[in-house]
Length: 367
Image 1: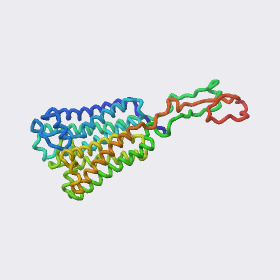
Image 2 (image 1 turned 90 degrees about the vertical axis):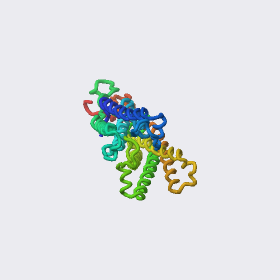
Image 3 (image 1 turned 30 degrees about the vertical axis):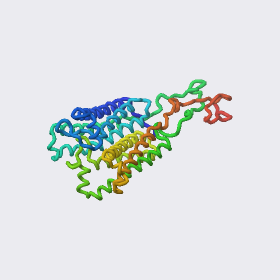
Image 4 (image 1 turned 180 degrees about the horizontal axis):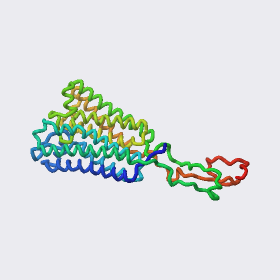
């Protein structure tokens, strides 16, 4: 079965949806900067501290929101560049859609919960509308990626090299591309693919193991509050609950690791998305530990606290290394005439493609 390509219209529509996603998140970042007493307060809020805004209100964004804005802009540029293989462009759109859907889904019920009654109802309503809109845009990206494809047929490829009219050709063979690695365009090479799979797989499993440990220690009721939302774990309007966020990022990392292990054509954008989000998530935990002085007295901390800090450092480093590995170029696209048909005749001494079978010594009658 031939590969399919993303049509020009689908690329343009996907880029437009990505820009809308970026604008929605960027608007809330600007809002946080506007209500902050100092611009650095937003940064410290992203790192887990709780400096009060200039007004009696709540922060709206977290450290992942700037990354979602950047990811949406990169996906838009990737979709618009026709030189980027369709598999990579589709992977970028679907990765952004998956990350947006996972990180925005719990906000639908969180922002309508009764324990947020102390906040301005208009503010929470706008934040909830933003979450619903971004979920709808994520679904739109999935639809565009699925419906905006067409078979990559051989249209436009003709036979060349005929010494006479077409009826005089003895045989036709396909051109053999030279210097092109096997596999779909954009597919990761084996070395980077294995590296990404190992790094993201290990990081995703580490985060998952800690979540299992938290569930065992806290119990189902308390852990459920950190998973589905509660006033005790609320930090920002557009930030998912702490355990939901960790599990969502672990799921993205494990899915990207599986794709890289299979060397799927969409593995590179999926790995870039998952690795960047997971790296920032753990870097925030490290920065908070540094701010509170835990890193300075790491040797004096209990073993469990040391393991938490060590895991955060490992996941952040693994995510950064996975970003570098996934950013390496994949299998290049074949030359435009790589699928061209080459015709050759049967006259003695006539040139023919090197991989074409020779004509028989005696031609059939009337040939």
